[in-house]
Image (cartoon, rainbow, N blue to C red; front, side, top):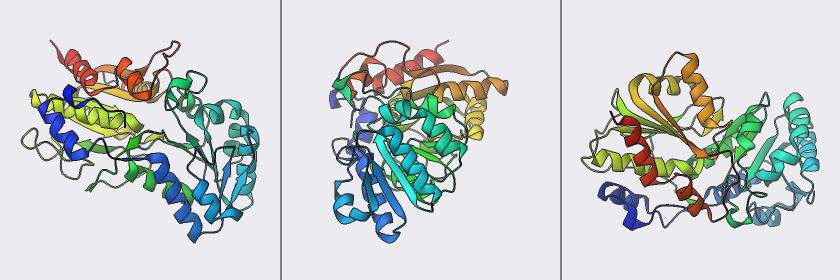
Length: 352
């Protein structure tokens, strides 16, 4: 997981990080592959379609165990989408798995027409999304995918924050009757335990503070239940959520109350959660591993403005420029997706 070094953490965030065991964890992509294999073992109508992505998609064990339920199309993402759509139209539950940077660029017409216009229950899985490919650079970064997929009608978009959300998202996609796009990175994430908040597509999950959270709240730092108001709300998605949680813990240490919501479903957006944050919080910070153009932040901003709400607001993500090259952790720090940067962003918004 791309997380702050222990020396950078405040005591409250350090205590939370220790409970989260940041050095341990499992990539959401691995959780996806294992969950899919378990589902496919029980349901022979489930088929995986890969574009020379069996290894990178962690599907090699799936292929060995269920060789008649996996189709390899080679480096041909457009064919992958067409075949996935065709299998879905014939009664199969097809999961098309390919690097998100290529899947959502080379195959856009096929996604629009073969999948969404045709309204087949195909599942498209964008792997190694965001800046997961790190040093391979801009050609392999996928910072556009949410924007282009949001602009296509009739598809649910899910970017899980942790192993729990991943498992639930795959199970949901396997039973869905309409198109679904799942977005996964490569970093080791956490199977955050003890949540009483169920996974519901289209509904954000409060992950800090309160009982039933994905993560424990530092003792004495904040109230144990979700307060009616907070100073700041972090609305985050995917692998950025844990950084927002650590920032919230650091803010609590300074007497600043924060809530963190995991917007695992980017489309349809949880409008009610956005409006509640707009009414109940002095400031809102959106956080995403995506260009700020067209992603979660702009969806939230549009929702707030159309409702006549105007809290102090900041979008944290990647700007409209050539992205620097480096590991995901380095890029997160460079572009402000870190505990310290998010804490400071919130404090700046709240300053008189």
